[in-house]
Length: 171
Image 1 (cartoon, one colour):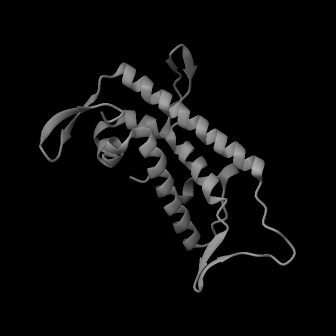
Image 2 (cartoon, helix red, strand yellow):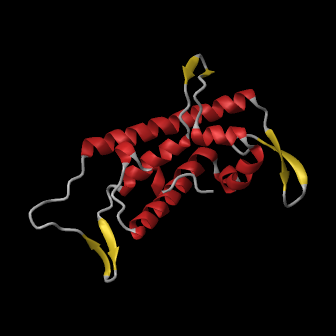
Image 3 (cartoon, one colour):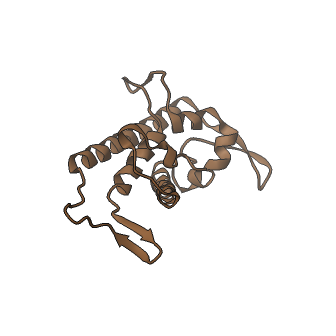
């Protein structure tokens, strides 16, 4: 299941994607970042079943992905959970914006302007990365919160056709 693609980069995180090739490249980055960070967050087992579980389990995964506007109180802290979607946009932006190479018919090249030097706003990159890490930590807290109020969700295992219980961590 693809959570983000090139259309999710808007506002402060808009990217110049003037060709279908650049859009495709960004979409590939999105999938790589999604796999990297969600496997760390959820674990291998749950991530591998993620597409099936989102259609079966419903609400908890919708909130995990998109967040909620309802305040959540957990361990005496109240917060509004943003969701992993924004986290994935920020991590993808952080890595993609540093990629100076472009694929052409003759191979991979790097742009070079005659009277200028490519510039990367380092402060903006650091702030983007820090915000993405904060949202990652927030997702961990949300998953702990969810597991604290739910013992698990029963799903049908398609291979054995038996009911089994899962929790948000997939254990």
